[in-house]
Length: 315
Image 1 (cartoon, rainbow, N blue to C red):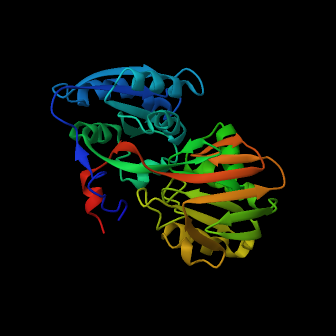
Image 2 (cartoon, one colour):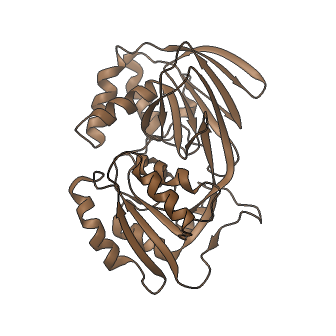
Image 3 (spheres, rainbow, N blue to C red):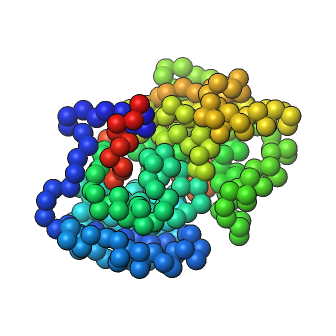
């Protein structure tokens, strides 16, 4: 089950009747050539009996946030992030605690949140999903008040995010090359982890704060993570030997990484991470430099998002 049953206050719903306003915020860099087809796919696929729609394009980093903020103030009913996890984060961060509903057309590389929620990776099918208008509340989270929706992390996690962002090549093969090329030389870092009234001092390859179950590409670091349980899965990963990496990779793909002796997962509402100095943090696939002390906390039932109707029925 991806989403647990919601309580009466936060239960899943459909958009009320009447024509709604919908804005598509398109990152023209995401998806390469396929992004050029998006406007025509929207025009052909969106139900104009239900929606008055507009399309806007981002022009620089952070622009999606600006556009989304303006759309929320204007009372736009649905705001759709068309791009990867970075675009999704920029748009979704503006919608937290608002009346606007997030939609996603995933045309990025990893598409971690979309994969977790079983949102179609086909743009045309994702548009059909938006036409159905089925939505639920989900949790969001924040690192030092910087929102994330899917997953954040420190250590090797953040290094890979930074290198992948800088790479001119996209796709899963490029992602794997970066992971493999950095693994041997990366030295685990020392962290002080405080959560659930306990403190742990450890050297870790990385520590992930999982609201959803994966980084992207179906690489699941937290198989039991749920988006509406009011908790984050804090994943502390030790560095395995090179010879054990194939086994670890298989556990990730089989959604069984929590069975590995190298991974310790603990659910928590809030965690404080202290490290030797300020370094990068992975925020939904984007690497941001932050202070050495990190306060990570969940924000329950704070975002409305369009999802497939069958998701809530899965066990």
